Image (cartoon, rainbow, N blue to C red):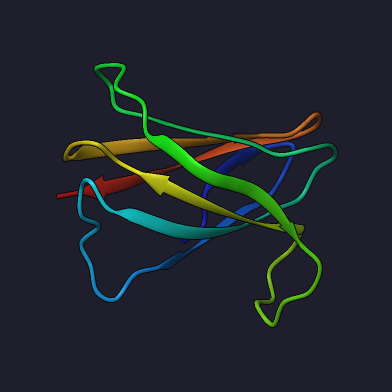
Length: 102
């Protein structure tokens, strides 16, 4: 999936057996994002509920996934269904994606 970004380009790769994403389960997402600086990731619902960042972001040294930018892996858990906004920020560059969770 391609994200919406400012001063950057953002891509996400979901590691799921089949859609849709399920609430309460950890999902691995690999991100590629251009820009500069460390990556910060957070997920929220419009009501303010926060996703749990189980692990990461962990920078990946090499990959066969060809998209612009540096690559990181994350593990996220969404505590309830809804349309989640995942925001990624770097020192220079920011972006987001929306993920539906059942």
